[in-house]
Image 1: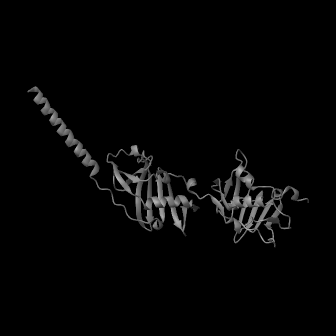
Image 2: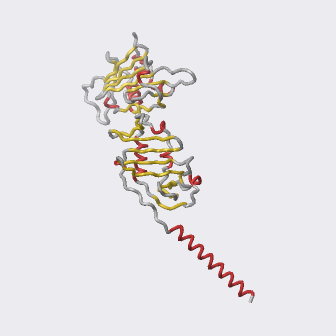
Image 3: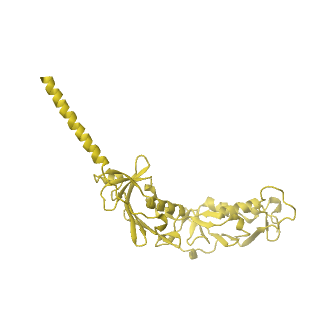
Length: 317
């Protein structure tokens, strides 16, 4: 009799556990994911990111993304990654209804609120938390919904960047073969380099020969050194920007380079401001804002004019 009673109790416990597990499973799997407005990346023209007390606004102007209101150009790759994430946002699962937002870095101290507009229409309003442990999802909340969801892909880092990280650091950009003149000024002396006249001899078969350079008065130059300089400048990146200053504030450069092709390009470098910094302030035709180059970076550019000639061809006068 006692054994029958124990078996009966065990059966009741097993049945209750089965009901509990079924209900728990049903609660987890039977839900509806929010429907997100459809918006193409090309149609988004404003993005606002707020984290804590800091808000960054990006606007598309004449086909180029800029940081508003300063007008700083945004790195094209970073802007496109943001657009692709916002337009392609996909919710894959419900994670939590507990409102324990700190667990997912969706609390006010950590979340990034991201809004995106198409014209006057707000198309996205989401809170972005940390990446999920798998690093294949990101914890997100949708405006008006207290639940936490998995957003497909790891994109948390894209909306937790500083203004200086978003800025396009390209300050000169051109096609190397387009350059037909290089003029270098240092210490009051100017050296002008141009392509040497083409040889009248039939060139050998195979890849096209590199451009041969000479000075404007006909002295053969170290063409490899000239090409290296052009290559360095063809996609020049600033190491940092100088905030609170205008290009007009910088005068009396210690080294300048002017390049001519289908368009003109220029770079001016100035003496370090002093103190502990050895960075060289600089301005260029490719940037509306002054910037700086590290000492190593600047020294790769600021070659003595004699460095552009073979040793036996160094200027004798």
